[in-house]
Image 1: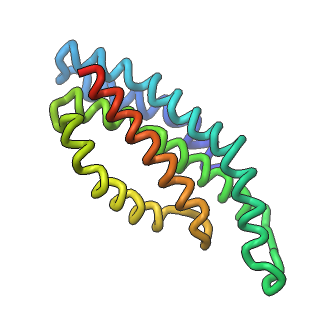
Image 2: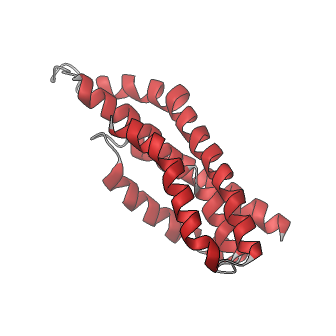
Length: 164
């Protein structure tokens, strides 16, 4: 129910945010904001789709067999739903990396060369953060999130470096 509420409410929240900040933005910033909203939606959808079609079908067998013969698996509908929605949301948020990297470079906060030099610190920080937000006790989903993050980060920085 919460996920449905968020999905329905996001367009209203984005519009209200834009309506609030638009009077203080320069025309270039307004165009950038209006361009990033659809891109962000597409990236979120791509991350959720990857999670639904690839990650969750790969994770579930690994998680169900993690206890072996020692533990009996007891799945509730609520926990399964929260796992699926949470995994899709996390992967959708990880897919926002190209947008964040592009925004940092576009606004002048970072240079592609600096992002490449400091990438090990960024990877370590994300690995540390993902250990708190993953929804299963094994390291499988954490590892999947980190691998996707690293791939998106590297691709984003390299594309930004090629464009600048």
